[in-house]
Length: 509
Ligand code: NAD
Image 1 (cartoon, rainbow, N blue to C red):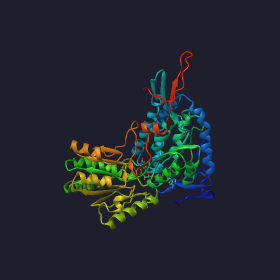
Image 2: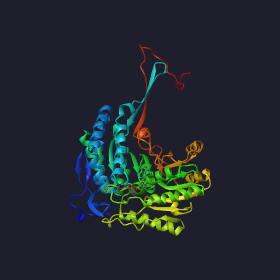
Image 3: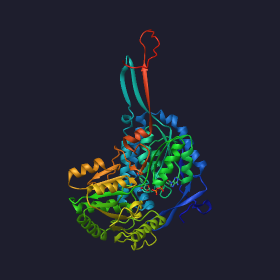
Image 4: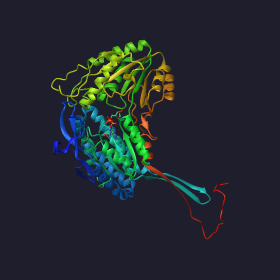
């Protein structure tokens, strides 16, 4: 049962929405939420219909005037309390993340911590919103720029970071004075709801943040409603493109972050052991379900390729795959049976396309969890750029090794790829590293750092078809995205001086 099912069959304790500070039901359709480690349906989630989404937008619109006028320091103080509540509830949130997503507990803890760092950044709202002031731009004329909030903003988030990605968006949107409607992934919705409830416990006024669970039906209402001023989206590229095109066609500001195929280039001078160790976590952590996961290694030189493949092969024999709750598990299951089948099909395809399957995880059995959505780690060697295995985002525990003759050939591969989210280089050569970071066509670059996910006070985004829009997520770009600039020019004539009309364009000449 993977498709939405009628309400009559849905469990009575379905996961609902959070509208105007209250739990709410709404929508006649439901979808199952699984525990990926055992394949069991845990609960049903209500899929919001137009009326429910309309109520959430109305709550956000009604809350906007009061929230816009609240001093930024007061908004920031709520974020300080929110951070404390997130830390106090860490175990609860982490348990939900692992139960619904499947990632191992330690990984879930890392996700939440990265989310909290965005709340910490948002605590700096009074500083972030100070604007700019210029005295005497003309004789006795002063000018300043303010960053004003947009109004109601919507956020649509993916399944793979159910706590962190919402926290990329609304803490900063809210401290900028906006109100918000969040539509989390329907596949693992509970963490986002709990986190939103904690923000209310921290003192957020009702209506400022609303959460609607749902699918395309809910998203399409958000994209078309005139009260929604801007949309932040994170998810797959086809949906990101749809969101960007539809949202902008309806006059909204849109940032839509999409999929990825992140390449790691390993140079002949690199420490292969260190590179392989780093690549294990970057490729197979969270079962490869990260938009920054390394899914392609470009080995420069055949000796590098041989040494790397042999090292990875040995390490993969020791990789502990099991339920995320089990101590010692390093890699959990995939999110759904449907996704597991999709990833398996890519492994079959890679074999058919002629790539060399060095480690085959398709036969993996996790005792006691036979119904879980597990797939063992897979490693392909001698993958080439004409293969679908290479070109398409798989989003699973499948690492492809491609061989290149030199650095330029490796960089040409990265640059020619449709996606340009993250990339990294392993080398001891500073000149090569500098040439790589100066010229590579990707938004986030690591030098001996396999997952160069920017910290909260920088911003996150890719190039090419990994991002539709102009501004990155979180950090300084988010302050720009969630505000619109107003520049005020002011003059107070002194005394009763009367001036003649001037028809020349005002200037300081
Ligand atoms: P997805 O695109 O299927 O879903 C993302 C969101 O869009 C969900 O809330 C979903 O309900 C909604 N949605 C799905 N189909 C829709 C449609 N046709 N119309 C409107 N809304 C729709 O993505 P996912 O499977 O949840 O997440 C995995 C994808 O997200 C991967 O491609 C991954 O690379 C990407 N991702 C990107 C980043 C990034 O920062 N670039 C971060 C995390 C994940």
